[in-house]
Length: 520
Image (cartoon, rainbow, N blue to C red; front, side, top):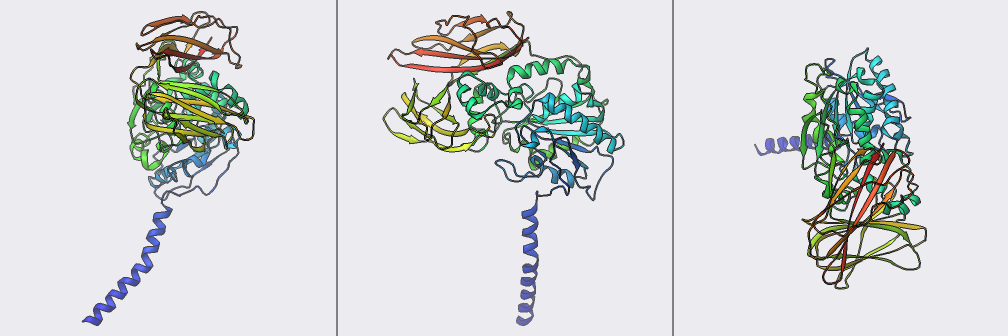
């Protein structure tokens, strides 16, 4: 009996030796399914492998990636969350998949939605002909949403598509894009060679112009739109986390796009997930099972598509800020110091974007303790190519905190963005789009001890400062209404407002609000 038990034990042990490695290998490879044929030239498209359980009644899925992305966005490595298994999930569910390459796939920066949309429209026509006129459905991530709408609505590709699901798309722009084109980002933008058409197109003002032309178009109701949002700001000390800290004043966000911006007034919002950030909102394991029921058909007529024009681009957009923003050149011969006065204990994040990855960045507390910044990491969101240093502080005591910065090899610049968790904030109401000489704005300052004054800086579409036309006004807990400066040409104009409060102890605190607006 013991011998038989021993032989049985050995047999089971040998079976484990054979099967366990196979099981482990299968687990490791899970989510790493890749198309067998990849093409990376802008304007090209290719098919995913046909699954063994292929269901021809289901519409093929076309994946449209976001800013600076390529087809690998759907089956390669994500930035923070490992391999994206979106293609794998679609394959396992029996869908024929299609991958497209927009201009961004060339790796030379991102294009605006009209340029990418025109290219996508031509590909959708070819894809539809490949499937003998069968309509496809689209899953789009981030800026892929506006790119898709441009293709369908402005370039006539709506007839090839049934439904569109957008994941974290900035349909109304991103305030981070406004920040990157703000007055204080000028020096840094020049050194980085920032002339990225895709980033420029994501300014709130530029997207307001796009929304106005898109939402009133007759082709808008010819497809069914679904939206998905996340409100997790990503891993600590990541570019998403720091961008999300800045965006917090504008509302719940996924580190790059606010929840409000991710929705379309005529779309069906499927869900908002507090565990999802802008990076993993495109992961199959996070969202595919929840969006898949809406992909089984490409039908549009069975839904009551809202044909009412609901564009809110000419209606005031409410913005808030509890941030201090500044920027400029950096010297390699001495430290540049920026004092940040904190009037009462709070928490917050201090971020410094520089052109170099060897800049010295320190923070001195009111007690004289010097802290080294975390980083640098490369910004992969809006200020592409910038090095990002940060301090995330659970407790900022009352007093003067000083950021000290020094270039190592010269030719460096910085953008300092500090965001505080404060209840009282500087508030702005201004439309996303308006007419010359007719666009007004209203600012409201928090009521607090001391004297508060406002100052303004305006940039035209070419980055030049406009002549000051509205006089800085002393205010405290009151509203201040004025009109934007007279302009000579249409375009996106960037307004930076600094609110300076002189406290009873003689110290000054500054809070900054940045917004863009499109002037017709």
